[in-house]
Length: 220
Image (cartoon, rainbow, N blue to C red; front, side, top):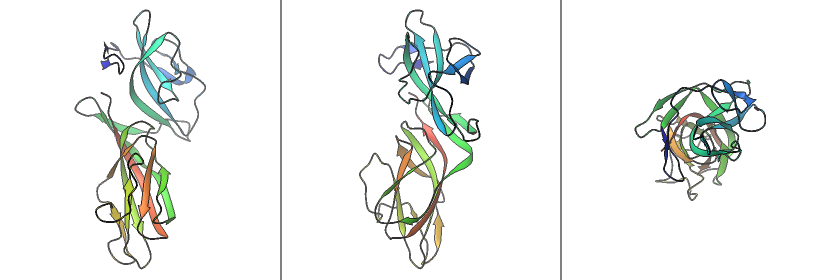
């Protein structure tokens, strides 16, 4: 059961429906699911619930567009319900998900995505791509930072917010002692809309390593 984002009508997919990501979309169960093109590795695909404008039949499929720009003719978009990542191994990246209060999803990768390794982070912010879909989500990131013979602070932030220097209170990863290193004990949670986050240090030549544990996605 889902509500349409534009007119608040409720629609329901009354039975399970299987779609094949590597076949062109066709209506109904056990049919192709790709709205346009062919499946490509290292790519996000967005799962859209759709409804036939004439018959009212409810269906779904995969689109490379996070906005559902390639929906089948004669159908209206109802709701973005999920997104899957097609890995370089020609398979969907494995995950575990649980439903949150209100209908959202908490998704954890079976193996955290090793997204960032750098040794040249400085006081100038740098944007890095992480393994979350390009829609509004709360990314969960584990980060490690170090710099030889220097205590440093690193600020991991949303690209949707104004940039800020890595200084109190704007930091969430740091080295604990001069020349030491530190890993975030709990996941750093960052709001994302573009599969990217921003890192900034308070010193030049800072080393960072970060992995993405998963994300939270609203579906209201």
